[in-house]
Length: 111
Length: 308
Image (cartoon, rainbow over all chains, first blue to last red; front, side):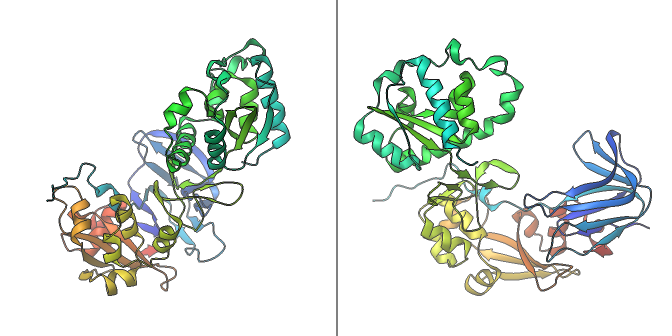
């Protein structure tokens, strides 16, 4: 049985099948983009499907086990082997404390 | 964007000639603040109040409202340049709208839509023109740094100004909020105690400074309380907020912030702190916080066997 695979802030969650959407066949694709270029990359010897669902979620459908690596020279997340099958790609988010600042704070009159 | 001075001078000359304002010296000034100072001292060239945006000799051609130009200059880019002008003007206590309305400050990105020459000048690195009496001041665009994935938010937490002028000076921002250099340095180095953060004048600064506190500062100096240790090693903490920070928050937020502490699966010596939605934190389940951050169920999170 396949279980979720975590690679840093990126996770691949197994799904029975990928939904309909925009699909392309690729040998390699970024599943976790980084502005600094330290992408999380799926890289296969055989082509696989990358599907963008109508709601924007990204899926990959692998025909064979495919390597997942971190494009970084140092302190990289270790390389993993992703089993064949369909996977939903999810990215970790963090609660933004700065959004909790009240834009209309009450200021009490002082005497 | 590098500043190509010869190309800018040539393009600006071509802009001025058909508009009959080419009888002045062109001078490059490396900092908008300095150019605004000269403008205040000398006064604006009043002829520019009625300078035509468009002339047939300088028609931008088919790309006037076309896709090609939008690709060069997005609305987000425009908003950032206006923010830069606002920051520099505020420092000098100048009303930006007044200068813009009388064309005493000409944002090249905005005018480039109507002028082939200014479009070239903008592509060569020109940010603003300030027509003062007897002279036209040319200000290069500064280096702009944004938050990852948020091009409209000025941000740099690596020690560099988010708006950096060619002379190396600039203005420091974290998540779109301006900081003085000394405060910025203390924040990114996690030198402030929570009590010092509570004393900051600006509520947005207090909120941002809090997120830059190191794990040690949070736990040892701020009385954060460990409220759960998950089966996968995630530790959930509750941080009591000083009154002033608590008062900044939206009504009903509560008196605590919550954060999780975890280690990198590939490099356990590396540790991270991440902030948690209080609605989740209050449930006192550290692993649930991780699952929620990934947008998956707790059962899915706990079923992970492979990670790196």
